[in-house]
Image 1 (cartoon, rainbow, N blue to C red):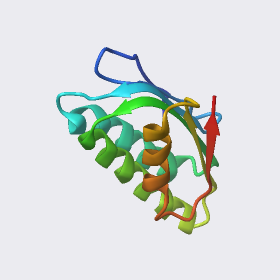
Image 2 (cartoon, rainbow, N blue to C red):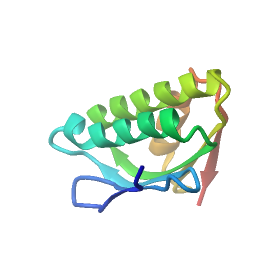
Image 3 (cartoon, one colour):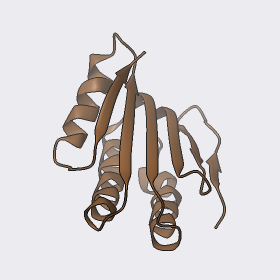
Length: 124
């Protein structure tokens, strides 16, 4: 299995998933024209990591904008992580938000409220 690295663009966030450390980083804005095209490889990588590696996952999320279709895809990722967590996998989300960005903080809180894995909200 290889690491997943996607460069940040005007419309998409940077993604850096490291299979050796289990640290999954997503940073920037996400409003791609087709969210499923962008998030498909991300979702597949996570599924493969869980199936093949089965190590702890720490997902660091630092977003400054997320459109509706991207929010749905993040929710899909959280559902995959929840299944992993419920079967004994170790999962933690660190959701970073700018101190004055209540929208991103609230988005993270809303996304995380239906899941059992730990989510920490960290202002910067």
